[in-house]
Length: 312
Image (cartoon, rainbow, N blue to C red; front, top):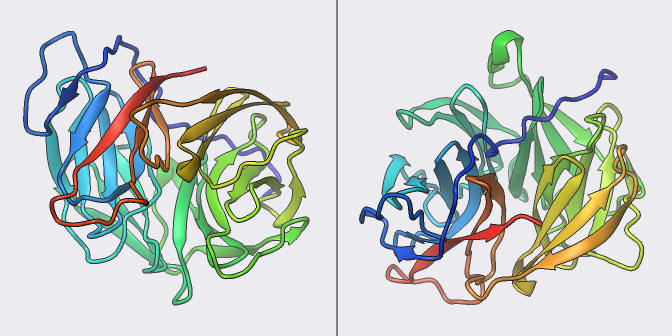
């Protein structure tokens, strides 16, 4: 695949103002005052987020349920039933389809965001596997596997048609990338600003890699003087790459060159409401991040939230 990729950057469809107000998921919020802290169901254990217009979609790493939240009112609705396996990295396409990374299940599924119906499911691998995150381009969806040095490519046909269950390909990473130990390695994924390659973060080393999706060849993205320890979700907006560093409770902001081979750290985003944020999406002129609370023992009554912060 030599033609340029065209990334489908999800969650930058509308703009509005936000102020800091907390709200329960079933409680309406005053018109004109969207909340900056969103309450998710107790015990939900969120990790992934995708946005489309005024809505955010969250996946539960505990049950696999999908929660849709109105970012303006704070109202929350379950649209995807529990699967008993994780729902991690998420992306919504322009056709209203939600692509879901299945974690330890080694799979991905595609849901209709209006009905919650499962449109397709793809079994990429069996244990040990941890399908962690996903990025959409014009003609494919790419998934990371934190337990393996590979990406999974799900080709999209004319009009975005979903392929048959066995039509995915596995891309083995070569070059600079090296798997380290048995912990979480490959994690977040985005495209380069020019759309010709992919960028992944390796959580164990904090390194960013540029990957040729046609060959799997990888090179280190040179960000002088900085590594991204606990790197998790990635979001590319123009030439700005946001790197969530979960247990550090911060988001690194990197200005990339056009090819995505090098960049400069421009700022760090922090917020007192962060509690191990994992992934990030843009909506209503803000960045939204779910608090996974990895350092808090989960119970059925443990509260969870998502936080809105300004872009940098």
